[in-house]
Image (cartoon, rainbow over all chains, first blue to last red; front, side, top):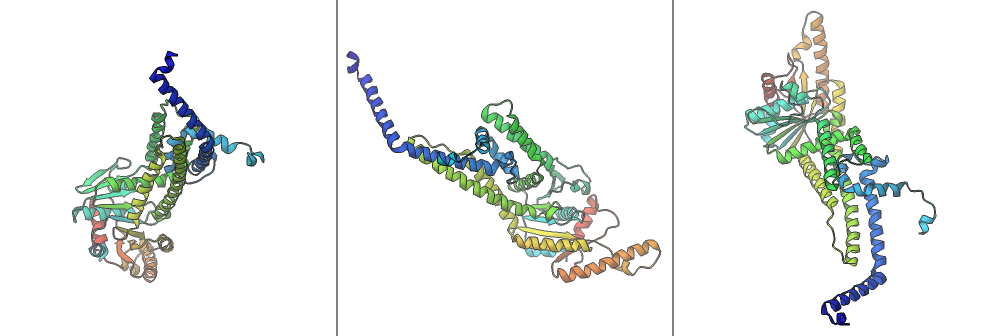
Length: 96
Length: 330
């Protein structure tokens, strides 16, 4: 009981409540928008990968001299990009 | 007469480019003009060969291929780019950047294979050369740059390629900026920090470099394009095509230089078999010189004779420079 009167503890509890409320608000109002924005960003990222490093998939795009300068920044995304491009697709992809 | 009249009218050009088919004398003209500008006009000149057939080394009689800037006489530096090595160094630079960015000792095999495979692309050579030219012009600090262009596509194809590259970079920059906008929206809604896009910065650097150099190349006040030809059918046809290409790219050709011209008197020479051979050559040339006169009226700015020995070494370069600058016009 003595703990509940400790100002430090009540401050941290207050912060937790505030964060939880913020989380709820974020989930209700913004999460959908954030997900949509990030998904669009992912599509644009894949498009960017395709027009810079299309050669890696056998699609000649442009002389690779300048795209090689971009390559180091794209390294972490190459695997997921290739998986996404080569993934089998069916009509459910259009639905979900 | 000769190029001196052109340069008197033009003032001090910053870049002079010699283009044309292979083996017609672009290197000879580049060396001659560079020598004159450095030794007689006291300008700090850089003569740059983009030709993979290493001809500046031959004409200056020194091994300069792939050795960087070499001073041949006071005020005159020459460079003969080893584009293969430049591509290899560039690939290694990219690999090293990947290693240091991600703390790797080995690069993933598929990425390494991709980097290595790019050297098989023929356009890599052109891009590396164009990049080297842009670097030199922006950093070497010379007053005049004389470019001896490679024969393929009259060298002007490089400018067309730069235009395409510039558009390509513009498009991906646009896509990148859009992606960055979405990331900023997501970050703001989440209350997170917006991270700077390194790729965008890199793209903007590439764009600036290409645009700055291409603008300089097409700026007629600072850059002069000359075509070199000989009085023969194929060279005339090629020059006609080059002029069309120049028009399509919005470039203006400064003038034509007719090279390897036999003395007119040989057309009437009398004598044995050897003289007959030379007489036939000279007559053929006279016919094509007439064609050049009618097809390219007012465009021929200099005419170089067929020398009794190959133009090689400083004494011959000096002679060429005199004929090029002060010799008779057509």
